Amino acid sequence: MTNRSLVAVDGLTVAFPAGPGAGDGLVRAVDGLSFTLPPGGSLGIVGESGSGKSTAAYALLGLHRGTGAHVTGSVTVAGHDVTAAGEAELRRLRGGAAAMVFQDPLSSLDPYQAVGDQIAEVYRVHRKDASRRAARARATEVLDRVGIPDAARRARSRPHEFSGGMRQRALIAMALACEPRLLVADEPTTALDVTVQAQILGLLRELRAETGMGLILVTHDLGVAAGSVDELLVMKDGRAVEHAPVHEVLDAPRETYTRDLLAAVPRVNVRREGIRTPTGDDTVLLEAAGLRREFGRGKRAVTAVDGVSLTVRAGETVGVVGESGSGKTTLGRMLVRLLEPTGGELRYRGRDIGGLKERELRSFRSELQMVFQDPVSSLNPRRSIGESIADPLRAAGKLGEAQITARVRELLERVGLDPGSYHRYPHEFSGGQRQRVGIARALAPEPKLIVCDEPVSALDVTTQAQVVRLLGELQRDLGLALVFIAHDLAVVRQVSDRLIVMRGGKIVEEGPADAVYERPRHAYTQGLLAAVPVPEAPRGPAADTARRSPAA
Image 1 (cartoon, rainbow, N blue to C red):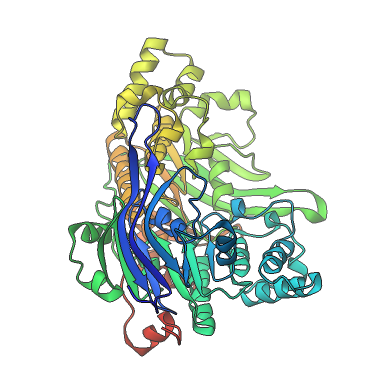
Image 2: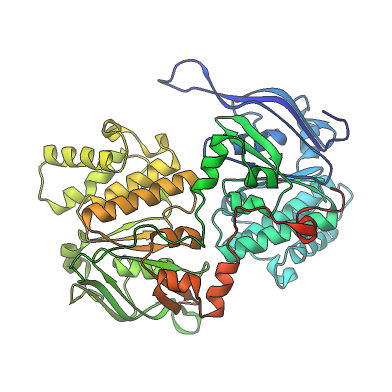
């Protein structure tokens, strides 16, 4: 350790009580972690969910205080001994010398307070002599710096009036308000589409170059880390398994775990394995013609989907990609009639279902199912997973309770979960396991077509690969047709036979997946593909300039 380090971590251990039924011991989320970061340096902390990445990041700012966590070891940040600091010193550190950007900006911002007021409040806490006017001016200044258009006006907006990318920029602006020496970014791009993700990462590089601040980037995406940091620290089960310059880790990883992480990263330039082979059944299951959906009325009406036409055949996968706001999710919900179209036609097996009322739709519900993006909000936290999976079976009214229970246990096993977990609740499962529960529920009524809406967007790369592999196996075994909606073009390529690219509610390009990926015709598609991060370290002087600040 050196006194010149911006961050010095030595033997950090963070343990939590095991909880009821798990014994009286402690669970070590971080176990003996040590690393340093020089002034102006940048470090990526990567690993699977549960590896301890975020727990370690929180410890840098003393955010485990008051949570029941047992923290030992030494953490020094910008000259502050975090583990020994009192509350007053920690308040000076947080937002002043060091700041954090959290994964979910919507839950990190006060929904009732204007964004500019929230930034101004942070500024006045650390600049005691600042007037309200000066704080508001500073809020506008940093919002403008992070690329919020018409910053003075948007400073008066509340978080729900910002897009996901703009909210993330607002959080970065708040973190920058007091010119910190260290920025800790915890999965800052996880739920963003590729172009907004590229903008946020570019912004972080620019800010480092201008201010000389250090950066610790926590991410499960090695492609995101590759072009953003100087060094990588790979974590597994709370421990550091590899720590080296980014090009060494990516080019010649020493540890098997690191090699497995790299192998699990989907590549946008790699063709899908096992393209669907003709089965003799080329039935058109679902057909949309001129599908349209508007929200609101009159001059305030917003057209989310504007004249979309597509077909989905038995056993094929149609990928749907586009930026946030392109209409992907609205289209998916209309295809399974969770939203009623305001125009156009929607036919299932030749039957017009676009205008059917709920009672008339019941006979189709079993054949058209959906897997939602967020399994946490789509599962009832007060009901066991077994009960949630059983719901569509009970609604069909064709099986007795014993048969339903047996079917649910069979489904749990089919998606790779323990059938004995029938009576467990959603909070007792990891993100990937909850997504498997969502898939099991969609499979319960034996559908012919499943719409998957961003089913892997919040999962780490190895869990993503497992869920994608599971969907492929189910499709082959059960003859399912899939509509796979995602903003991650690399993931979509691994599953799709055909691809649809949406922008502004319209289809701008479509065709066989490999043809669109390898020979995109539309400039928008070309831009999306160019923005996809790759798990390869940049080379040459330009790459060094992009990653490093003058102080590095």
